Length: 129
Ligand SMILES: [Zn+2]
Image 1: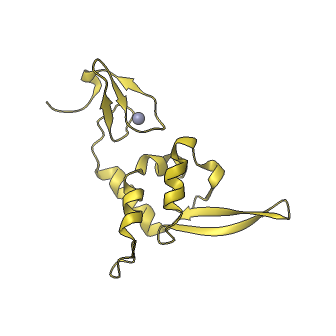
Image 2 (image 1 turned 90 degrees about the vertical axis):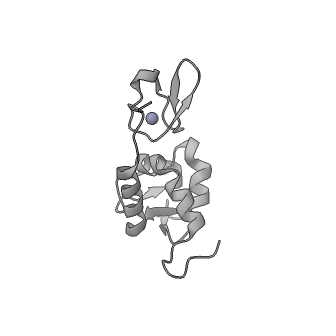
């Protein structure tokens, strides 16, 4: 899990980041948009916990709640958000919902993003065959 000296980006963290761009895109609008653990959808919680280990990717600060308790507030480092945006722009959007992948269930297809429950027929997919 050593950080790459040249870029300062941890490759393990970058993998978690780039394999779940739909989740981050769902969660925030950009690097100025802060979020808390409770904002993360249930299906993405384990992924978020993994990503939260990488301080090269997420900024973190502590805020007070009701005077006594504290909680962590996160935001994406601007350079890392840039990588999310680039990945969103460059990928192929096969599904009508705009997400990146799908699963074949025989007579129908579903979006492979856990936060999306869309189903579609073969001829709705934008794949040349
Ligand atoms: Zn979808």
